Image (cartoon, rainbow, N blue to C red; front, side, top):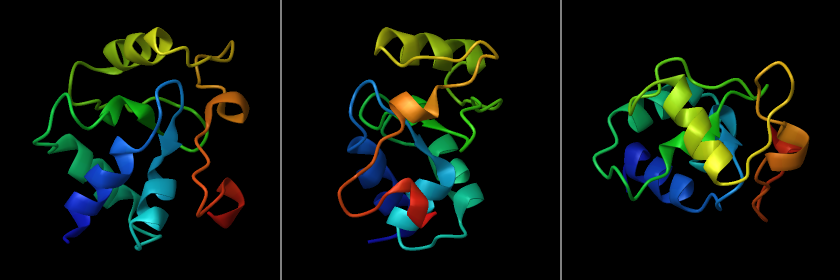
Length: 109
């Protein structure tokens, strides 16, 4: 399976109300230093509506400026609609909302 397909499979597993960060997805895809490649894969996502790209943010909770499906405002709306909490400075509250799959935790990144 190619890298992009692995990325899409991993992102599909992020539950509603949770987020993951680019480096986390790269690590889970087996290429831990490929966070930019994750962003590129998500930007080219051919499975719009099936791969929840809006659930991928920067490690510090910032939203992606180049969110491919409408910009940061749309990304925030989608996340808020799922119950994702934000801090006062507009970042996702990573302590409350970061996804921790069983095979890896944030300390692994």
